[in-house]
Length: 536
Image (tube, rainbow, N blue to C red):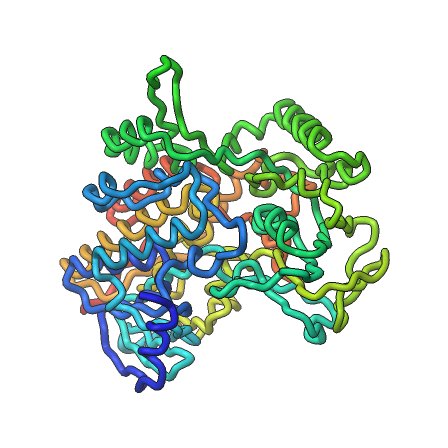
């Protein structure tokens, strides 16, 4: 189903008033899997999606060069064993169109779209203390009442536009990589400027440079980036994966980052594998000497690929360790700086002062552009939730509660917001893992919990201040000594990219396997740390 046909089908629709068991916010990989699991329980559902189609991350992020940064055969659903055998990904780390195609196929195959309203944003979710129900409202006037509210909003779905003076005065085309238009952006013969050299910037810059008359890159902080191991999928290795998918899934679930590292001996007698992509070896980088060696490796790599020594030096990080920020995989990124139509503006030598109607003014001078691209990332992990007016017991807002940093037991439930589940929320492996593995584990946990509550006639599930605080302390403890919490580290894992956001390390670095074991132990101990109360 195309975006336009779905959107037009809902145009002028009468707002819904619906009483359901579960409201699911988001039709990405998490929301779709939640519908699949909850429907099997016989629950009544309503899914709400801001986009005009399914896909989540892979719907919104369609900028040139966007692709998965972990092996795609591992970035796939595990619940449909027939699909595992039928589907083939053409590349080892697939580009956005191929993954969006896969997600749409899953939605069609399991008839998941019919549970969603599209082109609709949740504006508020308010807990009724007396009825033990969530009251959810949307920007199209819909009102839903539900026992459980599942926030499948994604960790990286709230685009960050930096607060630069004059940003509203720009008269050219302005676009964020996380909100790239479905119809694309005309760059032919245009002077293009891009702000940001994180993952989306590094992926898109070679493509923007090839299409534009001139590309000006405004770099705030250089990033560590390694060549992407993107090759056509080897049919022999794919056959080995398909024969061993159950083993691969088990290895994923007990691993540190949700990637199996599966290998086999190829026809030439050599061991073959897919590697780990952008999540490779982050735990090993906690070794200071190894980290210094990796820093030197990156410096040598850049200097070997960039012709101008001064530009090469500007592209080499020197003030933070490898692993502080997400390691980026790149294709021809550094060679792009050898092009005659590319200019690098190192903002460490003088930052952006304003955006004008015709370009960008920095302390180093003015740069005229026709198209301005923001590759400035997201209000990660918390933004997708705090930008909604979520009110729990006593009318307390989640934004107020999290003003000093997010708190959620196991990254799943925040005290005072009963029956609201956060899929891959802050305090879970989330963005430090193969997301689809963490998504399935969370949705399975929620499914089992709802089943337990229904079997026991329980009205609400919440957590306690003590459990929440204890978990937050554990999340911080396991991060000590890692590059993520180095004194010089200012990353979006800490919220450092958002002006005024309290810096708290948000994801759980203890590992996917260890986290899963903890969740299982909590359940075996009668939902230790949770409060199940009342009668339905």
